[in-house]
Length: 222
Image (cartoon, rainbow, N blue to C red; front, top):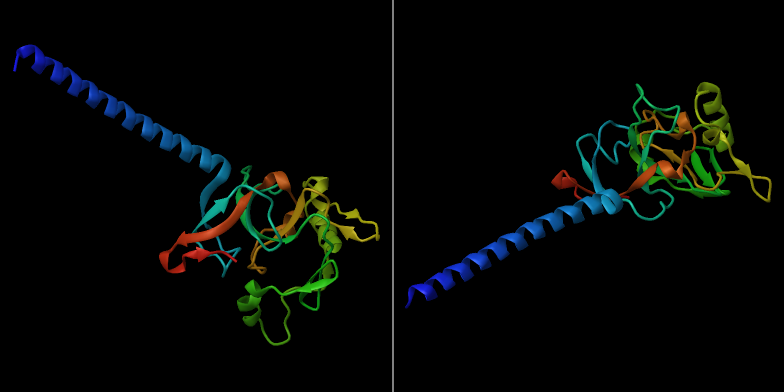
């Protein structure tokens, strides 16, 4: 084999190796770019800190958050703290459960949730209710309007939209468009709609759909 043929083969091999390296780098960059897009716009994760969603979610657990679509009633959502509810000037990210949707009339009566006049069971509160003493109730009788009127009195720095309902055609006070009422599952220890009122839709980051840490608790969220 001539020296010229050997040289051509070496050059071809070197060119192929360079091509493979370039393709590998492009693959890595593409994967990173896709991951960044997914995290920014589609899906991300959140580590739980605090006990406001106990016993459903506990400190140290990690959940998958889906960022597309609107939340449904009783979904668990992540949301930024509204103006007037920031802590030490920081807008914390909360994780809470959606109780009221736009257009809903919300009321607690006889320790039962009523939405638009219909009673709803809240199985995620079962453990908390069992811990109460005999004759004790978890939720006092109150309408959402009464809740928001109380919020307005205790926190005057909140935006007016956080404590404002609208009247529907039947004269009922309901949640306005693009707003939600959220509460923590640990009703005895949660900073939620009882303190900051309604949450504007633009503060909602996504819906927690799956817990993947710890491994013995892995599974979809309810």
